Image: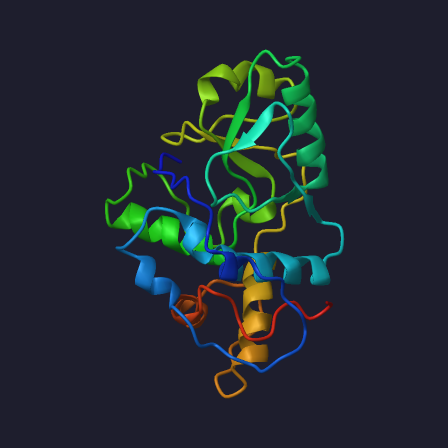
Amino acid sequence: MMMAIEPDAPPEEMMMPDAFMGTPSIEGTPVASFDTTTCSTASVIALSRQIAKQVDCMMPGQLVLFEEQPNIVFSGGAVLPYMSESARTDLYAAASSQGGARTLQVNSGFRTVVQQYLLNQWFRLGRCGITAAAEPGNSNHQSGRAVDIANWQEWVSILAQYSWDHTVPGDEVHFDHTNSPDIRGADVLAFQQLWNLNAPDDQIAEDGDYGPATEERVRMAPAEGFGIGATCE
């Protein structure tokens, strides 16, 4: 996915850890307020971290920490550092195979429904240089089995040797690790659970489907995160 990257990390207050404590709240900056004001999903990174942690509560071990390495760097503050374990193993191996001769520049790894909502909106609006964006709920990024690589030309043949496919028309930076489990919908369900926990008077179905009711709440959700985060913490 071709997109502008903001190099600055998100504000410190947006990186605070969650906990199953505090007061239920959906107060904050609505996700939809970023439809026309930015080109970086770093704006919703705090909420996305809560969703990723809730996925881990539901499916322990499905997402593992994905970190920078001597030959892997993250481009900007919008990279959510989680990935399927098998995808991570093969990505690390591909990067290491070059012995430091080149660096893998990662734009995006695991992506939550709120991040995918924004990317899809920017694509629909013709903003941010985005040439392709799946509908929320349909992206392999939401399974933790996809990456966007800024310097993709240097890595196509190398990544292919480690089960990373490069087959999405019009999305040159995008690679899929289809050997990893497809858990699309888990992040939608995690969002639905967190919404219901924090909005007891505005409940929605917890079905993992990205329908109109869920999209409406995604638009309303606080970018800084819910008052109560992941339920297993």
